[in-house]
Structure formats: structure tokens, C-alpha cells
Image (cartoon, rainbow, N blue to C red):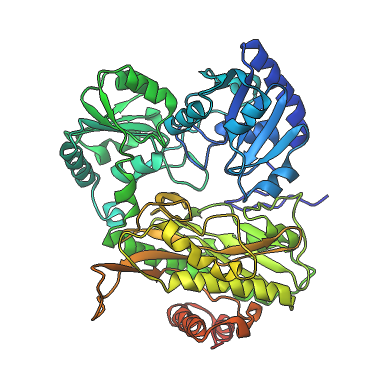
Length: 604
């Protein structure tokens, strides 16, 4: 039995308990029957529609043992299915027990699976945990059946006797010197937009949007500095915020005039009092709030979250600060990789590596938190894109195995995210080939020059084409948006074949193609990029074009590259990138680390 190891920011305790799953699922099935229902939906979400949730809202994990950050469990007529995408299919198999069936979403949709089992019955759902879009889509899909969706209280909460309490962490101001704009000016700008569109108010239910708008941060969710709250922005610049007042009582001076505090349980009643045209986002608005709005005298304008685009398009201050954060983070990463590459296989474990990386990051007092739980995956574990090491899964690094390390930090200056794949000892030619194909895709995105108006679906293939040529691919998007001292996963922009949101200047996006061979190895290489206006070309017929500016400056392991597969242009890009790494980082390292950096950044 391995001894418990701890970090300040990360636990290695297995949080799920799949062995208790069957008993808990049986209790839930009894509760479903007691309420006159034929099924129930248990999503991995909370009322704030966040990817990261508090311990109180970890219902899916508590019920099934599955620890992933996305999924939904469906109980219908004694059948139990858990729906996960390609990132989590292997993980879900490993973390759950029969009778749970692992369903590959979106290849099989929730409603299709339900309709295969039955064509009649009542399926219960908690209206706070599903968006308007979700419920409307479910209802459309089952319109020609006798299946009905019935809003009900959360049945998991009834059987979860020791469910944790809601978080009550104190919030704090996010200073203008980091935000680049005052909360008052943001309110005025968005209120003006409301007037232009004829809206009297906008309902904002995503805490990241509220944090950005009001220049506040908090500690309600691990690694994500948000305050869990709901809000209404009025066209007269005023904001009603619905929150546990204990969390914001220290912000009265920061708020000033124009921000009205309410208890969170006043939210629905205030929605029913709204009049005029109300801007809403159906993709994030809880169905419970939507029903209250339908009961009001207001008309609804479903044009989306009014904070999403301005939050995503960082201003010059935010971008300057983000560069500072990535420099701090790159220094820590280079020190860490110097240490790691000096180690010997057969001694280190995955947990040892996570702890050492955290110590390098923590050496800088500007680190506030890690931006997500560090993924350190070796050998077959690296084939799990979102692997989380714990005391049960922890393994010793073997000679010639890849080590995939995906990590990031939360700094007031910005949120970082970087993935490097390396190894101790020589790797196989198969690994080298896969690594090089992934690198070629990553470089392809980094070098792109593209017209304004292009979206993630237009660019995603550039990261995959080299893998495709060998019959290979990866089952996740190529990139996600990144917040500013907020969520490491931020919308609306994504680098994905399913994203049609055009890129805009100031957006930060990850570039992280990968390849995963189940049971053997996994590879991912990731930098963050910011969308920047491209210099005008002399004979260009395109009015406006964008390029990507790279934010991370950490060497890519040349020992894993099959040089013969690289084009001349790709080698030039890599050598120039490594030259920039050396230029930016070298002065911040000690003598041994400089020797390592010089070797790591030598020309290929």
C-alpha cells in the first residue's frame, strides 16, 4: 500500500468510489419509483453550468465513481447508461462497475438510447442542472413518443445523506491594473449594447461572466477563481447580483453605486418581475430560470451571453499581463524539465513528478493556484487524454516510456496551460513517428495566416492532416479558449470541427493536437496562442487577416522527433521557436539549467 503524498494544490486521493455505485444506484432507482417516474437524468454539471463544480455538486462522481469533467448518467427502466465523449471512454470503463453501460457520446445520443429502451414514460430531471437548449433538444427528439420530461427535485440529493455544504469562500476585487477596464466602464459598455438591441436587461448565469463584468474573483470552485452567483444587468447600467451575501460583504467599496445585492433564493422571483425584451443565453440558462422568465411579462431575446465575446477578446492590458504570466510559467517549466531530464527511469513515479512541478511553480510568489489538476501520465496511462493520477493509479516511470505532462498555473496576470511530452531513455520508432506527426499539426496551426471570419471548424483540419495521412486521429478538439485569471476552458471560441464562432483579435486559444494508442502510449503537445491582426501583404486581396502569437516558450523534446518526416519550413519554425525560448528564459536559470536549455534549444 503506497503512502499518501500531498501537494498544496492537488490531492492524490481517489475521489470516486465505484464499489458503492450499485448500492447507490439501487437507492436512486427506488426513489425514482417512489416519485412515479420511469427514469432520471444525472448530469455532470451544477446550476452555474460550469465544467468545474464544487464538492456539493459532484453527484455523478458520488453516484457512479466516474471522475471525469463531462458526462451524464441516465436511468431508465432498470437500465443505467453513462454517456461520455472520446476523452473519457476508457476512463469511464475503469472507474465504474456493472450494471452501468458506457455509452459513446455523441455517436449515440441520450434520447436515442432512451427511445431504444422505451417509447413511453416520465423521465425526471433537475431543472437547475440542465440548460434550456438541452431540455428543448430532448423534447424535440422525443416529440413523436409518449415519453415526457418532468422537472422534479434532485433525487440524488435525497439519498446523498452526507452531501457537502455549498461553498462560502470570500470573494476579492480583481484590480483594474490587471483587468484593463473598470467594472463601471464594462457595465456602461454592455448596457449601451442592450439599448442598441432594444433590450431592457440581460440575464447572466455563468459565474465567469459575472466575475469578468464586476472585476471580482473568488474561491467557490477548486482551481477556478469564481464566485458562484446569478445576475441581471439592466440597460440603466445597474446590476442585480444574487449570491450568498457572506461571500461579497467585503466588496461594498469595490462595487460602489449601481450594484444591488440579493440573496440567491430571490433570483426566480426577480425574474418574474422583469418586463421588456430580455437577453438570454439558452445554452447556459438553467431551465428553472427559463420557466420563471416565461411566467413574466417580458419577451425573450435568445441572442446569447452578453459577456462571452468581450470577455474572450482580451484588451491590451490583459494581453500584456498574459505574456507576463506565461513568462513566469515558462521559467518554472524549464527548471522542471531540466530536473526531469536528469532523472533515471525505474525510480520516479507520476506523483513524484506532479509534486516536483508544483514545487517549481510555487517557488514564484505570484502563483495563486494551479489552473487544473496536473495531468502526469506515463506509458499506457498517457493514452487517457484527461488522466488524473491518484494513489491507486500511480505508477513508476519505465525506461523508454513517454511521459505526458499537461499543467498550468493561475496568476493574477493570467491563466496558463501547457503540455509537453517527453521520455526517460530511448523511445520506439512508432512513438517517434506519432510524436512527429502531432508536432507537424501543432506547427501547422502555429504558422497559419487566415482571413477574418474563419472559425475553429475552418482551421481544425490543419492540426490533423498529417495524422490523417497515416490513418490516425485524436478524439478531442484541437483547442479551447482560455480565460484571464479565470477558467482554463473558456468559450465561445474553440479550435474544433464543431465550432462556428469566428476568431477575433485578442482571443486566447490552445493548440494541442495529440495521438493516443489505448493500452500503450499517448502524445500531446500544447501551446497557447492569441489571435493577432496580420501585417498587410503588398498584393493581398483579403481585407483583413489574422495570425497566431505564441504565448508559451518551453522547449519541445527534440529526441522524440523523426527529423526525416519534418519539412524544411517546419524545421525552420521549430528552430526559431527554440531560439525565442532561449532568448526569453536563459537569464532566469542557474548554470546547470542554462546548459540544459542550450542543449534543448540547439538547432534540429
